[in-house]
Image 1 (cartoon, helix red, strand yellow):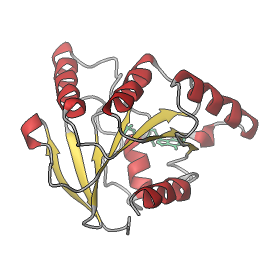
Image 2: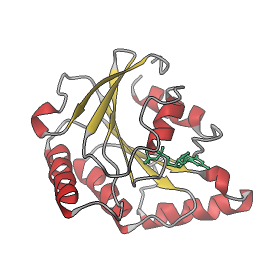
Image 3: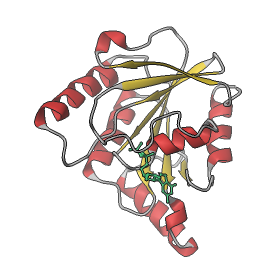
Image 4: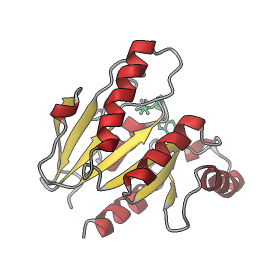
Length: 194
Ligand code: GDP
């Protein structure tokens, strides 16, 4: 898979706009501001592809990027932003419910968490949605550049325990800013879709 060949396809704001064309989908989820856009941009070698620094939680939409004509990176709307209105939060909930309930949409889940912190209750909920969907998943611990070297392993252990990850679920320390973890994530994706 050539991850440098990526194109934006569409933003879905309703269930009937979800893409169902049989191509596998790698579905990215994460709290607003965790750096999800930055991680996607880093993986795809782009600067401003997925929107970085967009007003958090402003619009609930599922963004689709087609990779090398073969699969999609599916970018779910961020969650956990305090200043979002009740209406927007409800819209987000309905959209996510329809996304996670529909069988076969997700080939591989990628949950992005902050390497510095214990995962939030929302992170745990999102992780459980992936588990319930029955898809394999991997967890990316972003912003690892903000940690001291000796803090990395203990923090990863807290993340693994809080999310109750099975031993075979990869947990990758990552820095969208510096590039750490990029090779590992891309190689996991390549293996998965080989
Ligand atoms: P999103 O809301 O999850 O899509 O987050 P963004 O990609 O917009 O990033 C939120 C903020 O975190 C921005 O200011 C980014 O520059 C910053 N950021 C993202 N990834 C990293 C990282 O790996 N390290 C550091 N230090 N900052 C990051």
